[in-house]
Amino acid sequence: MAKLNEKYEAAVVFSMKQGEETIKEAVEKFAALIGRHGTLESTDEWGKRTLAYTIDDETEGYYVLYTFSCDPSFPAELERRLGIADGILRSLVVTRA
View 1 (cartoon, rainbow, N blue to C red):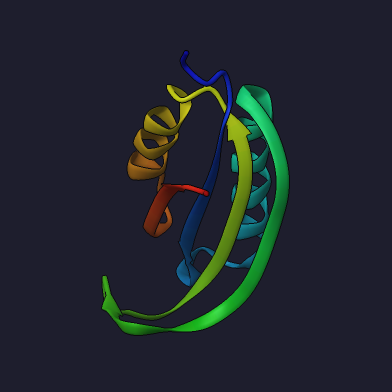
View 2 (view 1 turned 45 degrees about the vertical axis):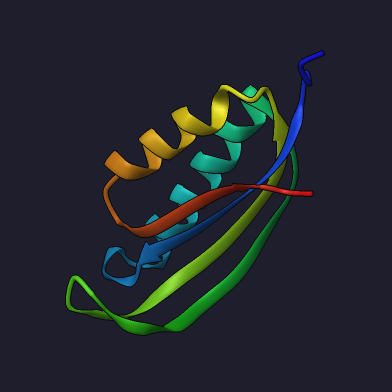
């Protein structure tokens, strides 16, 4: 039998070039998107961190970890939206155990 809800984590690195106000809006936008398609358990903002290597000429990024549960079809849509959104350096969506 297929599971109705799976548990996931999404790690997102936002560009610091946008400014802090725009980053906060983007964090809330993705939290609301996850909330509409599942249950957002937590939004853990790690804040500004130095990147391990330069990405798009940037050495710092704003890290956020979303923990949520949803239908197994939603993570692909979330990855698509994260991939086309402006101001996101890297993102990764994984299944939690």
